[in-house]
Image 1 (tube, rainbow, N blue to C red):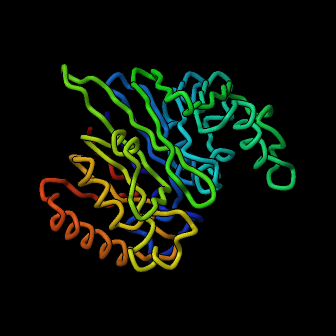
Image 2: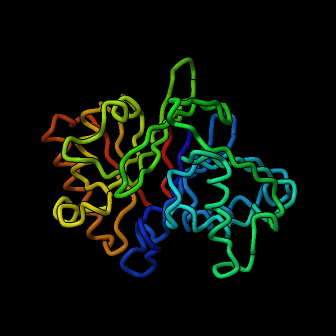
Length: 289
């Protein structure tokens, strides 16, 4: 697998000179399997640039197929969807997964942002591509195969709602490789649940919400995000190999993100995680799993 970041900010896009190095788009990660299949994690504004790139190949010819895994339906995780060029091309096919009690509920949420008050599209029925909505029923601890990947999920608390963390597994050379995506996690003081830690356990890459510094998170607990301290602790407890911090607050400059990454490195080392590799997500960064 390869994971490429197209959006690394939280809440709202943050374009400008102070965010050029890491990027100002909201959450979107593109994962390519060893067989070339495409799985997209969240559809924030970063999806627009991803879509433009995809149009240069099979998606521009109406021959593209991809799965889209939505962590939750806050706008910074879906607001790129109506502006994703491949969805307008007849022949392209997308399956959208997300946390919901039914596929109809998830479809209604996506339709909602295309309401005439918000969008000239009016409805997803005006899109050219074929779109299938497949909600994930976590009450049954569901796992499924998508694009050759074994996909599992667990819900994390996120303020008054929840966000779905995904684990993607692929066998490569007889070895099971794994990537976990855990955005918008607002743990209680005790940290992740045992079930969530089991989802993270031993992951080759853990992409983890790191919206705030510990000090800022302490004053904004109701918003349901993690700090770099939460990310570091989760990575150490789960014994992951590579931690990637992401979903940075829109008000944080690149210099502040640099400082957060340095602090996260110190926290990992202090908690016994010296062997854990650390990266700060930035637009255009590609990591091999």
